[in-house]
Image (cartoon, rainbow, N blue to C red; front, side, top):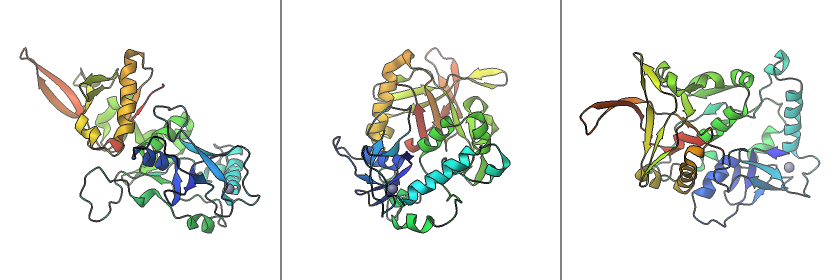
Length: 311
Ligand SMILES: [Zn+2]
């Protein structure tokens, strides 16, 4: 049995595996490990974090599972809830009856801007606050209610991207997510980069060419060109060393992008997702004098960029 959330002693509340992963990479002690427990206080069985401490593993998203030879208490409310959910999914996800039964499996709202703490003026350093840590007590009060799922909000693009990649085409059409107050299916919220002219409020994505490295900077170019007035233009982004260094999760980001860059043309299906930025036309004057036009995506917050690849 796997779990999305666990009580984390060090963080002092219930957290998602994504949150735990971020907190791990935001500190520098490589040997550090969190202690996780069942979110149900009365059960409190120890849980193991999976893919929380790893870089580049993308086959399985981060999650929690029960430790070997441990079992939840017979009346554990979390297990009960999961059982109920599993039963409602078993009934067939495409029937009208189960349609109304919301599953909490995938996020239904993406929060682009986390509420900031007061008196905070460091731009990116401390954008992770307690927003994603739930007090443990909350769980107790919801267990007696019906299976009506609570809204599942996330501010982690990776969480949304993993969910999207997890779904089949039918599920992408049936599962809804809110992005900037716009509620649409996952299918309609994600937009291939070559259709970026359809609007700004999308999570754009596409396969990418091998990453080019310029010193400590990186250039990412999408494989698909965008056609404007019958002419193809490349869409690219430039990730500077500065941007990475100022990012709270710089260690995670740099190691991931380095791993991918080293794969060069061996990287299979590397794909890039971004949100909150929009390709802008840019003219580059070449030495020979001719002008080269590209569409450039300026990423100012690396939380809004996710690169997926097989290791
Ligand atoms: Zn439990």
